[in-house]
Each structure stands twice: as C-alpha cells, then as structure tokens.
Image (tube, rainbow over all chains, first blue to last red):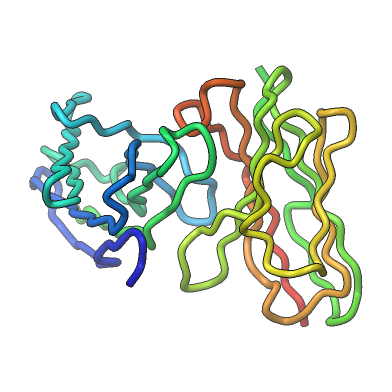
Length: 111
Length: 115
C-alpha cells in the first residue's frame, strides 16, 4: 500500500466549477500535511499547509481528517490558470525533515 | 532573492557513464534535500543535508549515488555508473533551519535521461 494515495485523474472541469480532490495517507503518526501545485515540466510549489481546523486561502480550502487519515482540497470558481497537477504531501516528522508525495491529481479547467 | 538553482537542466548520457548534478540552495538555507521523480511514479525522497552533514540518506537507491555538500553551500549528486532506471527528474529543495517542509523552495530540476 502506498503511503499517500491520490486519484491521478485527470479531472476535466468547466471554468467556474467547484472541484474537490482527496488524498489518504497510511501512517497514523503523520504530523504535517501540505498541498503542492506542479505545472507541466516545472517544480512543485507549496499551495497551502493543511491543519486539523481546516484552512482557506481565497478560492482554495483544505481540510484534514485525522481519524480517517484523509486530506481534501476544494477549489471554487475554477480558473483556466488552475490547470495543473495537485500533489498531496505528508510528513512524519513535523515537517522538519523529509516528506512523502502522492502521485498527484491532474486538473484541466476547460473554457 | 535568488531561488534554488539546479544545473544542468537536462542531461542525456549513455549507460555506464558518470553524471554530476549540482544544486545551489537559497543563501542561508541550511536544509538541502534531493528528491527524484521517475516517470509515472511519485516524487521520492533521496537525502537531506543539514549544512554539510547528511541528516538522512535513507532514500538513496544504491551505492552508485553519491551526494556531497561542500562547506554547507552547494550540493552535488553524482551517479556512477548510470543505469537506465536512473532516468528521471532530480529536484533539489532548500529551507531554513527549523522550517523544514514549511519553507521548502524547489529548484526547477534536472531532467536526466540514460540511454
């Protein structure tokens, strides 16, 4: 079983739609959680950290459910520029050392 | 502020040859990490330096891979001899001490192709 599981997609959604991505992790001792964004042939970039209380950044909302070992990312009012691969990232060491990446979920926003 | 710089951006070598990848972290970033993405797979951790010391090298695939970080500044990752399965994109990331993944900045990667 993979440490971090994601549906690779692709998710094809029209502009303005709301889309949600999910991710599950296998290690119950995991401490820190992140969503990264990766554009084609580019490096990953931190989108947001994920906290148990949930957090929001503009059109993006991230949620963590420790009991179910489940992380989600919600994107509202999708823009063409949101097209990218979204990587679920987990750390077992409070984020202070290595992290484990999911395979990534590809999003394509269609005009 | 200059970002994390990696070079070369692309490298094509023959099986059995040697390749050295270089990473220049953001100035003042004591943490330096190497990751690799093999086509169709997840990005995987290779190793972590704190200054010039190897903190964790549990992800290094085998002894054909050698990483160094001279003087705690730039880092090199040497593959000798290269095998076909070493093909992939090698990413370097750096962060300040105490920040770890909360402050990761990735370089744009080196795309290695072994033929």
